[in-house]
Amino acid sequence: MLQALIRALKLPDLRNKVIFTFAMLVVFRIFAHIPVPGVDPTRLAQLFQTNQLMGMLDLFSGGAMTTFSIAAMGVYPYITAQIIMQLLVGAIPSLEELSSEGERGRQRINQYVNWMTVPLAALQAYGTGALLHSQGILTTFGLGGAATLSTLAMIISMTAGTMFLVWLGELITENGVGNGVSIIIFAGIVSRLPQIVGQSLFAGGNIVATAAFAILGVATVAAIVVVQEAHRRIPVQYAKRIRGNRMYGGQSTHIPLRVNSAGMIPLIFAMSIMLLPGTIASYLALTPGLVGQVAAEIRDIFNATGVVYWFCYFLLVVMFTFFYTMVIFQQQKLAENLQKYGGFIPGIRPGRPTEEYLNKVLFRITILGAVFLGVVAILPFFAQGISTTLILSSTGLLIVVGVVLDTMKQLEAQLMMRNYEGFIK
Image (cartoon, rainbow, N blue to C red; front, side, top):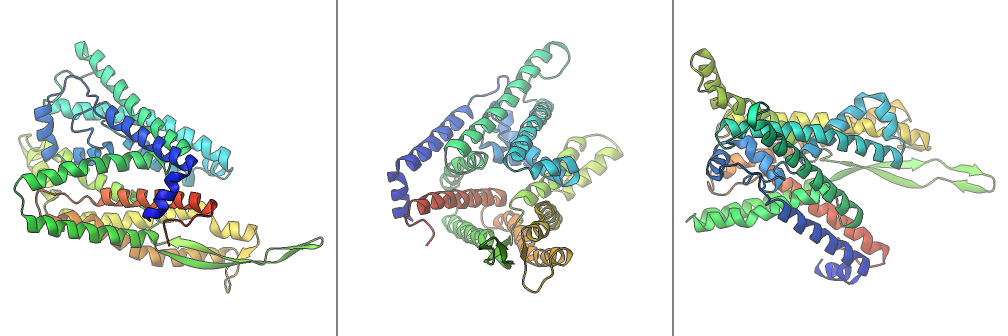
């Protein structure tokens, strides 16, 4: 692998792409340290120690949320817009037709995603500001009176920060290596690792616990790599066709059905649902009377240290894995495309029988992927018994491993085009 990386850096075009990617990441890290004025940093740090929803948003912002910079929301609104658009494509026939128009349709849908990101980012910026204002972190906030101008300036600057990061991601995708948005999230997560490990070591943590935590992390990464790359190959045969004096088709290939087709999306869905009731209840728990009592009970039930919370989290991850996998698979229309181009699965009739067979196989292999994602999701619950100063983020591990594998595959393809031996042997 090291030799392949050296070969990649010796090629001028690949070297320029790698340098460009690193340069954009440097710009991202500098941009992430530009703060929004009027924030109390001491109270902000205390909020992150008690609020898990803010911690999840900080994961995607690369630590920019802890300083409440103009890049505090990261590319999270863009990811939300992408998820919404993927679900709308399967529900709206006009969008489904547009997605099947090739590169032109893909660019138009991506344009819709960018447009959708702006109001989502503005709404999230306002919600974040309202949350911080309720905790006494933002001194001036609101859309009435003297605070209107400063509030609008904060919303506009944070929305512009999100769109700037999306633009950086698109530049990396076009001129660099890998998927730009994913690499920005990856860089944010990795940039926090030295701080987390340093806090654990210099805080007088147990060396044995830290070593056990590291072993657990390495084993988790290895398991994620195996499951992410695992797939079931469905053999496909194309019928022979004679046109004039030439014969076309007749070759054999396969359809790779991935064990984990949903990626990290089920974790994001499940985490958002599990954190939302507890977060809302924590603000209503101080209300006197019956409302405060019910809110306090809900807050205790959805406490991340309880068994009920992690059991429900596991079930939601499994359910969302099946849901998202089936939605994406239906949009691909594999059975219809195979029949259109003369392909068939040996022993299975084209058309509806092929679709039913593929759905059956996908359902069976998704059981393993869903259970695996569920186990990875509840790893922090078991890691708490090993170390209380280190946090094992399942979503972060999936993002890091997925981005590394995707980037390696792209470099692998570039090297193979030039007749070089690649990373994967």
